[in-house]
Picture 1 (tube, rainbow, N blue to C red):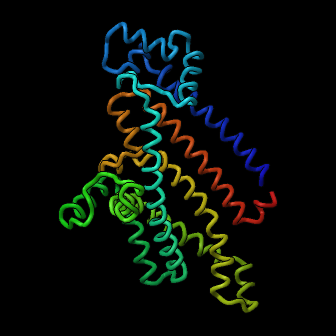
Picture 2 (tube, helix red, strand yellow; picture 1 turned 45 degrees about the vertical axis):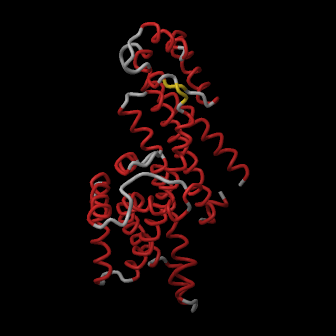
Picture 3 (tube, rainbow, N blue to C red; picture 1 turned 120 degrees about the vertical axis):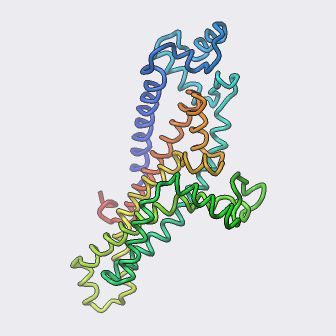
Length: 316
C-alpha cells in the first residue's frame, strides 16, 4: 500500500504539472493581445502595465512567465494587478473550507438517500414502491441546479422562512448548529440531483449482484439473508458507487459555482465566479489549480477505497 501511495503521489504531481501548463496556455498564451494588459484589468496606465509585465515575467517569454507563475503559486504570494496587487492566495485558502463543508454535507445527504432508495427498489423490484422511487429519482435528475437553487431559496426563505436567505458562518465562530442551519439549503440543492443518479445506479448494481451465482450459493448454504445482503451484495455493489462518488465529490470541491453564487457562500465556486465576472486572470489561475488538486487527491482516495472493497485490486 505504501508503494501504491508513492506511485499515485508522483502520478498526481505529473498531472498537476500538465494542468498548470494548460491553464497557463489558455489564460496567457492562447488569447490575442498583450497578456500584461489582460492581467492588469481595466487600468491602462503604461507605467502600471510595464510593472505587471515585469512582475509576471511576461518580458522573459512564455517559459520564463510560466516559471514566474509557478513560483508565485508555490510561495503563496500570487498578487492580482486588477485588484491593486493584493495577494489572492489567502482568499482562495479561506474559501476552501466553505466548499469542502458544503461538499461533505451534500454528499452525506445524497449518499444516504440514494443508496437507501436504490437498495430498497432493487429488493422490491417491480413493486409500486420501486416504480415510485424511480419516478422520484428521474424527477430529481431532471432539475437544473441553478433553477433548483432559486426555487428552494424562494420557498424556504420567503414562503416558508425556516432557513436564512444566504451568507455563511463558520463552526468555530457560531457553532455547529448555526453552520448547519446556513449550509443545509445549498447542500440539499446539490444533493437532490445527485441522489436521483445514485438511486438509479444503486438499484441497477444491486439487482445485478443479486443474480450472481456466488450470492445464490451463499443463500443455499443457509446464511442469513441480512448477512448475505450486507456482506456480499452491498460490499461489491459499492465499488462502482465509490468510483462515481469520487468524481462527483471532486467536482463539488472544484466549485459549486452557481449554488454558491446564488446563496452567497464565499466558497471556491464563488471565488472562481468573481474572477470570471471581473476578468481577473490571477484568480482564475489559482482557482483552477486548487480545483485540479482536489480532483487528483479525490481520485487517489477513491482508488484506495476500491482496493479495500475489492480483494482482486488489493492483490494487484
